[in-house]
Image (cartoon, rainbow, N blue to C red):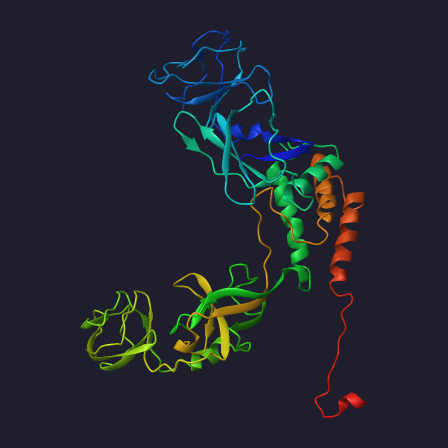
Length: 465
């Protein structure tokens, strides 16, 4: 999420706090060649490489009260060491002051009553004299805020931030966990050791440790998930995008069509047997009932004459032009068919009873494959799956973690921060590390508590014993 910001309600006022340091991250910079006085319309830079007309500059560091954002001249190209400005300098700047080339000079604020959509609020100058810019909203008492950076010269925008609730980040968000860890050891994010990237990486390592521990995490089990809809004549559906180890069936608990029973798993070799003598391809050009030719991705496996099932209807053909992948139609199908639809020969469409999982290298995707194409009766019905979800990566400070005891990561990050600050001399005897291990152990052991194993004999009248 960029820009990083948070909200703090204070009675009827909402303080919107924006991290202005984001604008200088990974930006080209140089230094003043000599002292520059306020009121001048140009600056001398030690290097003008990368500087041009109509650009946004920051002279000074974020948080310095005499830093300022200023634009280069619209038509005067930098020459020698001189960069001509669009307006005069507001402040004096000493030699060796940093000159940043920025992407943005303003911030747009938006509001939404729900966690979606945006309503424009206001355009704000980036307060470069403050590391954290503060903007107050006295109107709204609920809802969400969104922000994005703005380039007023070229009318360009950054991506939108996440929707941040007026009440601020909840305790289970990435932002809150990192902040609480920093506060617990009286540290702050810097550009050298304790970077935001370091905290994110460390948190991700801890989450992987929990996820990869023996057993399955109950909070990552998903049930009755609609993973697709039946298209008659199709024999597969893409595996859930968040399925753990998607190239195998080990984390699929159930797969079913509509209200039918769960399909039984079979090894790929078994499923392959159902397709012996059943050529398969797809249309590469839409078919209309009046067409004389059926255009296929490949017709090499099909008979020289015969019939094919296109989707759910039959088309008879008199000749197979293998070199061009076309069939000369002798009896038309009953309706049209779109490009990409499945074409079969000798296939027995019906309700699948079995499935396997395989990665189709041609598509680069893992699929749940049935032992037969689905017949027309089930057209449009949902395909449901029960499965174990992978550890989904977060891409924002506003993302929430799904672990029941997310507070344990505060201890883990606190330990990692101390270890990094002390050149690795903080070891496993540290109190935060010990607390992390204790809470991790409790969390994992609770996964097995309160569960009993029951056996039901397969014999009549066993209940009497």
